[in-house]
Length: 140
Image 1 (cartoon, rainbow, N blue to C red):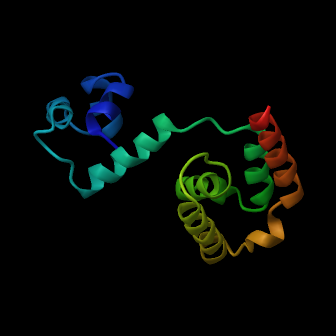
Image 2 (cartoon, rainbow, N blue to C red):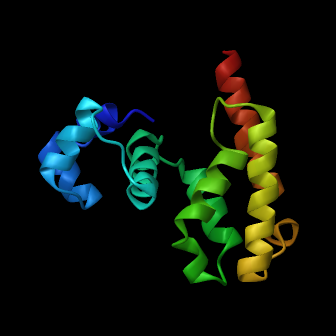
């Protein structure tokens, strides 16, 4: 992530400072590269970067995520869980090692934080149908 690019995508230093919870002067320093964010601000900036650069979820992705968590409404609001789900199963690009790592972490978080066994709740047939349609469209 490049901070100056994030600030540009957020609409300038004033809007970026509001979204990041920092002063406009700090946003200006970040944009120029004369100041680096602390740990908490870096995490906020990273979350916003993912938010503004992410591709919107397809209807299939939304449906699979919501169906998987139909009995755990609080899990649907877990940003980390959403990121892991997207990275493990839907994000284009990246490499297999990162996707496998995200998949393993998704399974762990679901089980440890919400008591959900991924393989018991995920609709693999619906995912396969979506995946095959994407592969066919890419080949055309």
